Length: 181
Length: 181
DNA sequence: AGCGATTATGCAACAAGTTGCACAATCGCG
DNA sequence: CGCGATTGTGCAACTTGTTGCATAATCGCT
Image (cartoon, rainbow over all chains, first blue to last red; front, side, top):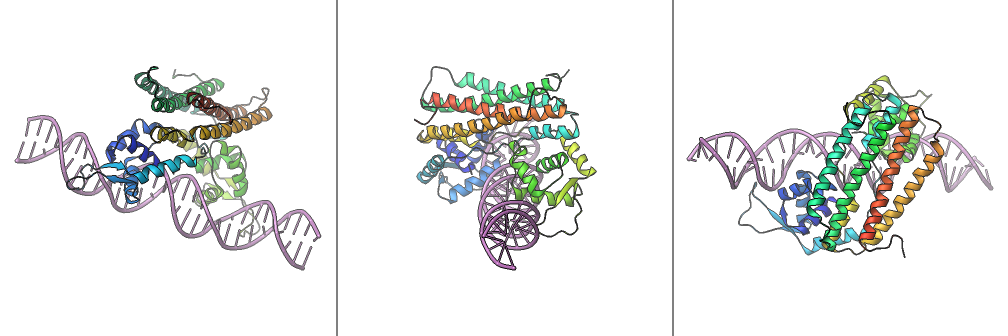
């Protein structure tokens, strides 16, 4: 599984506390690997126990007080091993496509509205990605690190574009308007 | 969750036994909602207990003997209710994008090969979808049912196309060849 | 008739992800 | 100083998905 490796990557980029990680998983990292704060805290506990990360020292630690983690050499090695292994793409599991297939047997009522709703969501997400691209990735800067990050963002942009294209195609084929009347 | 609804849809299309369902989940349905046979058997048990489906009668039923299921009216209603409710698209969780982000902190070694491997997998999948499209969806037939099924397939085709485009873009940006030397 | 391959159903244990909640410290404000 | 809002950590229970295995019937072949 990849959650621990997502966390190791995030901590290598920047040592953080559980809540800071949670926020980053809600923003940039979460654009391709989402996780809730409970998942993150649980995984931080496991990673610390496994000796892959450690909490930065603090006077005394009590519940409700910030706790920063950093990656230990063993953690960096574990991440490298994971990266070297290679993951197969997981089979698609998409409820909206299933919804279409269901519509073929129970009828298309309400389908147009649902497709339009998704179209709106994807358009909004695409706009967000584009804003980030314009803000963070000017054509000048071109270090390898930047290029990799930019590629990830491009992936998000193109994926949202795919959905928008497909949804418009679907609505057209069903004789439905693209926007609410 | 959607597995029960995927099964209900499949059984409405065609009453089947657990193994027949499993095969269909490996083919057409599995292209957008994958499931293993254990998941399917477990879910069939639950659906039967809930009164949404029933096993077609047979002389006597023992382990290792085929058991066909059909959807009861309550099952059709449950499916319609699920379809009416609407699902939000789930956040992306993609290991390859995570892999790129990890490469930014631990180095790009082996990344090109991994991207090429994925490129090959997606190209093969796309070819498979295209073959199905040519075989099953001639421009003549145009019932609503066919149109819906075709749209689902188009989704698969466009999704694979997205991956191929992005992977080629990524390899180019990294100065890597698109195919093994 | 005997036997291995295939078809078919299913249990159990585990791993991963989700939901709901509890509780402590700290910060801002009147 | 007191008190509500926010920040921060975390447990417990549950659902979903995966892996490995057990077991029974049937089919084809010799």
